[in-house]
Length: 120
Image 1: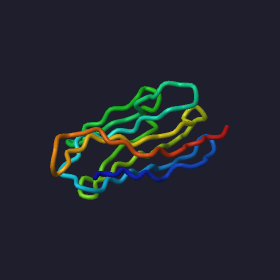
Image 2: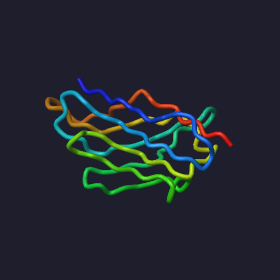
Image 3: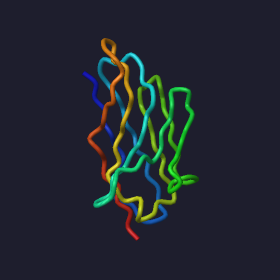
């Protein structure tokens, strides 16, 4: 069984910063892509950032230059550092990893989501 546990969300004023973490645990052989999608009320889910195992990163235009994704392969953890936050960044942020379990084929796993609210 594989689990993803997120932490670090909360309420912050516009211009502030937050750091999200997502730790994977369980029968893990390897983690491939690690992603942070988000979903705001009434809007479609948006991929904010992703990072490959080789640490190649990709960002949505809306967060480029403000957010930084990183990973710690030893700890099976992915981070999202969010700076200069804006009210439009308000959303539920999910952790989404492609994980190779010890037995079986790679699968797509999701965290429970963490709320980020940016006040103006």
